[in-house]
Image 1 (cartoon, rainbow, N blue to C red):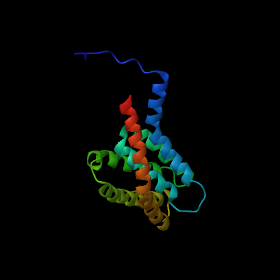
Image 2 (cartoon, rainbow, N blue to C red):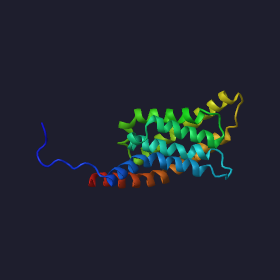
Image 3 (cartoon, one colour):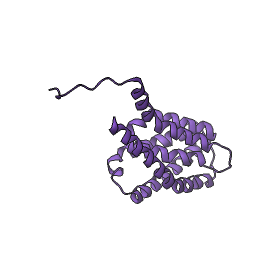
Image 4 (cartoon, rainbow, N blue to C red):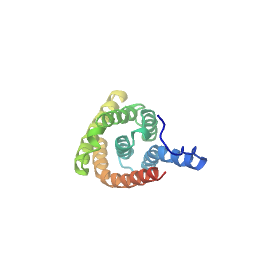
Length: 179
């Protein structure tokens, strides 16, 4: 049964470009954070610490804009820029993406404090998994300080990044409702 009223006109070029930009923004912004973190400032674990909040946040609030192939490419970018064993960052980000996607219905309804505490567990688990994968793939026991620094930086930056990403997500949602 068709709805009564006029049919909606087909999307024009500008509306399609706008929709494409909104759909691609989470991946591009997360890639920008990874590239920005690759600036040589001698902070261990900074690249992974900035990649994780983007993956976690966008997987929960815009899962269609952060599919697994995009997470794979972001993990590959992370591995290439951090000179870690190829596959360690990929697998870590894919595991975080999968678990966050599985718990999405619960996580999206949590208060910020609860979500942050859950993110702290995600960050610790991701750092432990990354450390373990680096040990297995590199055939040596890596130092634990970069993993601990990664957790600390990631947990400390999450409120600031979540605040900014929430504002961006809200603006994108308002733009979608206005169409």
